[in-house]
Picture 1 (cartoon, one colour):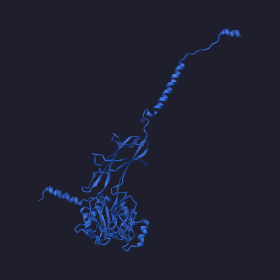
Picture 2 (cartoon, rainbow, N blue to C red):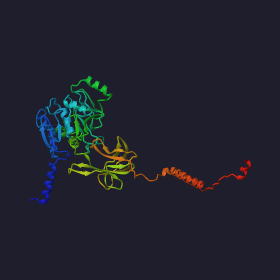
Picture 3 (cartoon, helix red, strand yellow):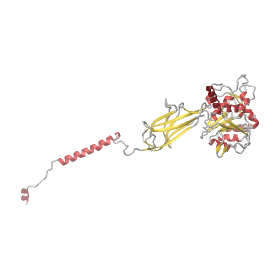
Picture 4 (tube, helix red, strand yellow):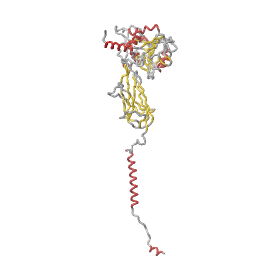
Length: 449
């Protein structure tokens, strides 16, 4: 008989295995060919161990539906049928974009062939190469073919790779160039000595024409991506994988040809990609915001010009280990804007020491009345975008709110007072002065007559 304490610990551990780590849900739809399902068994078992509920569906099967009654049926969707050119009627580029608007996370596999997913990738800012042009590299020297490339990830190049994975990641598939879309999140880049070539039945003229449009070295080097993320404005995350074999059992179990016994880094890489895409890692939210005058606590709908204002924001980060939101105070570059069309005030919003998750800023309201907004807009690669907007009015002082005397007006006050005093003195001297009347003597008047 086990002691009661050990039974409780065992039950809690089993519950942790059955509860998913995602902040948005644990239901996953996997679109994969039935013949290829066993090729990704390690990848699927790892997701089940994390607590995800997997549902499988063929690319041409009609059920289960992605969207029913305008609501997504799954929190996450993985499409591993990268070579399929004809999907079911509910799996279209338009439906996948609709899923992102409904905050459904996606992992989409690309292929060296021209498929509907290849056309969809262009809508997300990716530039796929011409069909039949996989990524190849002849370095380092190895026994494997040139299209099977070991890529050593660099954690400093991607915020998504949270673990220290120094083992090479085996990759085979199609690269893609990155456009100027600021919502793109590079996860794994191609090696500097690699390039795209038409060894898989592609057209040399097509890749030359494409390179001419993009410039010299457009399809070569580390500017190419092989796994790239995308975070929508609605909060959904999409990851584009240039070759789904990176998740296969063969690549996960593959060992280095030079260092026998050294396992590949594909397992940990797949874990990191799933953790970021399914919103386990780097997930933030604003719990609440507060605004009031300094030395008060009550918020107001309107403030007076030149008021000293205080703004507070409370931010938390999702912890996948205990599935709880915890206060987060590690943001160093958070800013606050006080805007009316254009920002009138932009100031830093630092963390408050002693109060986890609280960020605060004090400032003076501008000397201009109108409708203003407290705006927090934080966008960083890999992190959840934070946005908060609170509208308030800034009004002039009331009739009794102005100061009775202005220091700048003392010259005018002195002029008015001196003029009044002078007028009073002049009037007093005028009225109080002696009055003399002139008269004529009668004698002189008679003589004239």
